[in-house]
Image (cartoon, rainbow, N blue to C red; front, side, top):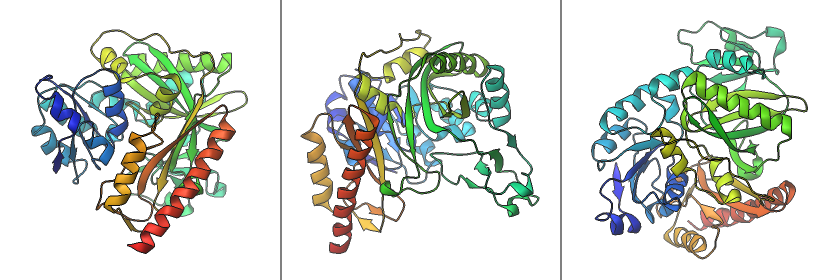
Length: 398
C-alpha cells in the first residue's frame, strides 16, 4: 500500500476534519464528482492512485486488491465511506470495512440479494419487464453460440464469454451460470434510491468490446449519453427503479445494465454503486451526483430528476494497451498538462510515470462531445487512433 497526498487534500486537511472516503477498483471519477459537488476533502483508495487523482485527493494505491483495502481503511482518517466498482462482488469485505468506518451505500446483505440472478429475475419480471432465460447447471447442448457463460462475480464484462459444451460438465463449485443471448442495444440506466423508491437520473449507450479501444469480447469500453428515451421506455425504467429500490433496499446511486429493444427492455444486472456511466451523465447534464448519493444514504431524501432541454451528447472511451508499455515522466506530465489546460478535460485516469502496462490493461480514458451519437463516436475513434499511434511510438522508444 502506497499513500500519495494530493495538493487539494493537503490544503484542506485542517479545514475539514471528517473527509469522505471513497474505495474501489478506480476512485477517480467519484472523487472528482464529490469535489465538484462541494463535498470537501476526499480520501481515496484504489488500484491505481492515478496522477490526476493525486492532484485533488489523498490517494492510497492498494496493490493487494481487494483485501488490501482493509489495511488501507485502518490507516484512513475518520469519516464515512462509499465504494465504486467492483466491490459489490465482495459483500463480506464491504461489511468488514463497514465495521471500521460508517458506510454510505448498500451493505453486504443487500449486495447478496441484488447480485443473485435468481432473485433479480423475479423482481424484474414482477415489474413487467424482461429478464433473459437463465440456467445454473447447464445449457441446451444443441444451442452453442446462443448462450453466455457469466461469472457470478462480474465486472465490466471481464470473463464473460460464449458458453461452450465443456461448460456443461459437473463442477465442484458453481462460479458461473448461463444466460440466453438477447438482441438489443447495450445500455445502462442510473438511479438514486432511498430504499423504497428511486429517481431515474438518465441512461447511456454502452461501448462493448470495441477493437478501436483495444477491448475485446464483451469487455466494457465506455459510454455515450444521455440516451433519449420515449415515454413508454422512460415509464418502464422509472417503474423498474422503484421496484428494485423497494424490493432490495437499494440506497444511493445504482446502475442497471440492460438491452434496449424495439418493444421492450431486457434487464441484465444491477450495479449498486457509482457506475462508470455516471460520469457521462454528469458531464452532459452539468451535475454532480455524489451529494445526491450521500443525502439518500443519510435519509435526506431524493433529488428532483435532472432535466436539460437539449443536452450535448458526451462520450467516454477506455483505451487499453495494445502492446507492453512503461509510462515515461514526459508522457504522464504531457497528459496532465492537457487535462489542466482544457475544460472539460479530454483525458482522465492518467497513469503515473513508471507505471508498467501489459497488453489489455487500461491506459487512460478519453472524452468527446458533439450534437449526436454518430459524431461523438467518430471523435472518440479518431482520438483513440491518434493516441494508440503515440503509445506505439513510446513503446518502441522505450
